[in-house]
Amino acid sequence: MRYELIVIGGGPAGLAAAISTHKNGLKRIAVIERDREAGGILNQCIHNGFGLHRFKEELSGPEYAGRFIDMLRDTEIELLTDTMVLSITPGKKVVCVSPAKGYNVYEADSIILAMGCRERTRGAIGIPGDRPSGVFTAGTAQRYLNLEGYMCGQRAVILGSGDIGLIMARRLTLEGAKVLACVEVMPYSGGLSRNIAQCLNDFGIPLYLSHTVTDVRAQNGRLCGVTVCAVDEKRHPIKGTEMDFECDTLLLSVGLIPENELTREAGIEIDPRTNGARVYENMETSLPGVFACGNVCHVHDLVDYVSDESERAGKAAAEYVKHGEASGAALEIKAGSGVTYTVPQHIRPGNVEKSADVFFRVNRIMQKSAIVLCSGGAELARFRREHMAPGEMEHIMLPAALLKNAQGEITVSTEEAQA
Amino acid sequence: MKELICIVCPRGCHLKVDEENGYAVTGNSCPRGEQYGRNEIKDPRRVLTSTVKINGAAYRRCPVRTSAAIKKGDLFNAMKELNGVTLTSPVKRGDVVISNILSSGADLIVTKDM
Image 1 (tube, rainbow over the protein chains, first blue to last red):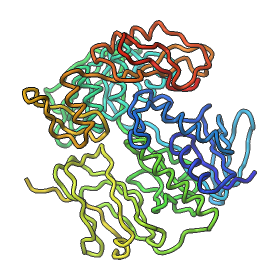
Image 2 (image 1 turned 45 degrees about the vertical axis):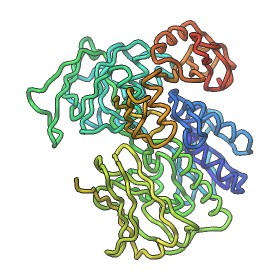
Image 3 (image 1 turned 120 degrees about the vertical axis):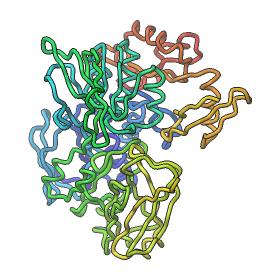
Image 4 (image 1 turned 90 degrees about the vertical axis):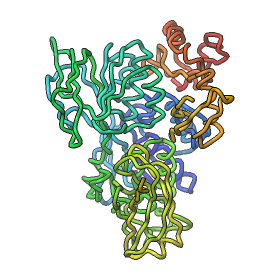
């Protein structure tokens, strides 16, 4: 079986990418999804706030996904659910298995990687103490509660202030549990301010910044309490600041990791800063005809931006199949002072019509500041910002004319106004 | 003067609302922020999102939400109303589960085809 495009992953990124490629003229498209239905993580994100940018409405996660699933249904795009991709080859063969169809190898003219990300676990951050039941990642607890109908516990502490943790603080409270505290090792929250307001403040749940969990205690195999400590600038616990919380549940909301096993195995270059594939302006990876979009490329704050990025990848995949490889020299986009990473990492000015979008994150909270673009020692442009935070992805647009003035590379850095 | 974080969009503007001056809002970046700031002091409301039991579907819970924001003080009472509901598959996105929940004027609606 040969397809013009195979999309790996049927979450928000994969759905938007497939629909966009179809709109741009490709017909033989397959979306491969390992779960039994499309929609990805949105299916368990039952809270509202999705789609404000795209639909000018506040939708819940399933509603946002549902709109894209409806659009997909109106096309001849094939959706292969319950199907696990085992590997992709540099020659663009996709090896997969499913209970219904067994082992299959599909050939593709182009591939879009849209596998999303997964949560960091307790093992990834090394919390001392016992190893009882009752310690969950926030997303696992969310799935149990919102899809399967199981409550994870009655008294909870949440470690990490990522958005999923904050959303779960409200969710558990509404379902009758007591959420004792949300504990964040950094001096700022990794989640959106609106979620601090409507998920913690609304219910009087305290947020301890610059604190962490230093001990986990168990009784009869179940969590019975945790110790929380303040930390210093080096994130080392400070003796004498211990607080004990009696709880049966500890939720971890401590970051997301793009899921790139398939990408690595195919020999595609990975950016160690994003943990996603290095991409060009059109979301193409180092392997021509293979594109990456959504959280598999870099972790986003808003699904609306995932959809936008995925549509760009979809359009580019259609271009590739119809017109062949994009060519021309590439500029390297470098992360300068105060900037953690940029996506894309390369821009081919010859492939940019009007402007190229660049997304990045800053490494600390900044008040009045400027984003400065430099190339070959000269300043190309500067953009003002009133406020920037690591939890909020930044976006700038580089006009084609500006790219022509660049020499070999563009460095994106930040400058904070002196108070 | 009350200080709030706007929850209308992910931007999270820091609002100041002056109760003594006709609930004048400053710090907002859009008209919706101004409206939120005023309402948040006079009559705070939230959209409730939760799940209800469903039989005959792939999963045991069906996601629901209120069609409009309801009084913040009514959230826990509304949750009690949800406990009594059992749906049977098939249901469609937008189906009304409880109309005019707690006389709020808002309906409780299904948010997923199941």
